[in-house]
Every structure is written in structure tokens, then in C-alpha cells.
Image (tube, rainbow, N blue to C red; front, side, top):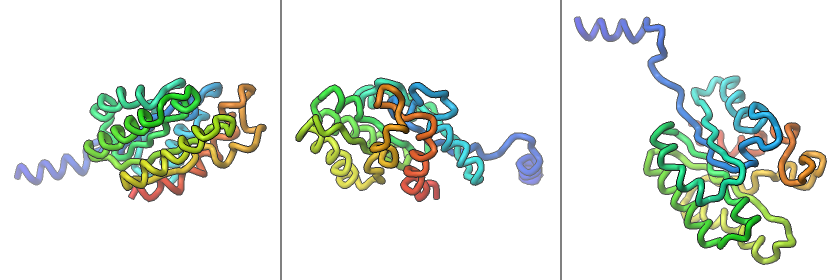
Length: 200
């Protein structure tokens, strides 16, 4: 009798039995939507696409403008506890590079974030970045770091988050660093093929 009542409650309760799974985005200004409205940034567009495609996922965008890999690492553990994500998108490192911070330190931070996310049961997508060529050999090592991390950790990699807009000035704000609202759908379209397999 109790089992029958329990099943009845599950079937007819007005509250959803299963909550949507969460995609946690840990990024910097490129994911926080610097200079544009939050709903125009690619993580917000991702949430809309997931809804439209009837994927049972929500998006928690914890990206902060100016964030470094060290900052993301320090914030990740409480974020994992709070959101219990199924997928973590790590899109950090740009500010490490622009500030010329030691690359071994950045790699250590990103490795630790991947380990923590996986230990919580989440899948991980690492989004890489590039630096301007005037950074010389540092820029080359910086870009290669993301592929090295993904290979060593056997995690999914998007080689360069801004690939579809990087060489098109019209898709950047006046500071030449931050993508416009018009660039955000292109960034999402570029990221989607790397993210979609993790949704299964």
C-alpha cells in the first residue's frame, strides 16, 4: 500500500521529480559577457539552446571578469558543492597570459580544477586561448599548454574559444579584447560540437 501511494505521488506531484542537470561555466570576462548584457553572452545563449533542444540541463555561469586560473581554482570547490554540476566548462587562462604569469602555475591550477571537477563526478570541457603574437615564445607555450593538459588528463578540449571571431575586428568591442553581442552566437556554435557529446 505504501509503495502504491509513493508511486502515485511521483506520477501526479506538481513538482518535478528530477531536477535539471547543471553545466557549470568557470571563466573570465570572455564568458561573463563583459561590455554586453548578461543574457547576450554565450553561456546564456547556451541555456536557451539547451531548452530549445529539450536537453534537461541548466547553466550556472560563475565567470568573473579579470579572473585568473588561481581565482577559478579557489572558487571551484564551493561551486561544485553548491551546484553539483554534471559538466564543468573551464574557460580560464587568458588573464594569466595577458599578465605574463608563470605558465607552470597556470597549468597546475587548471590540472587541479579538472581533478576536482572529476572527483565530484562531473565531466570536463577545457576551452583554450591564444595570446597576441607579440608575446613571442611565451604565446606559443601558452597555447600549447591547453592541448598538453587535455592530452595528459584525457579530457575534452576546445582548442581556441574565440576561433570563429579572432581575426575579424568587427566582432570586438572598442577595447579590441572583448567580443560583441553579435559574436556570441558564433562562439556558441563553435563550442557546441565539443560540448554536445558530454550531454549524453
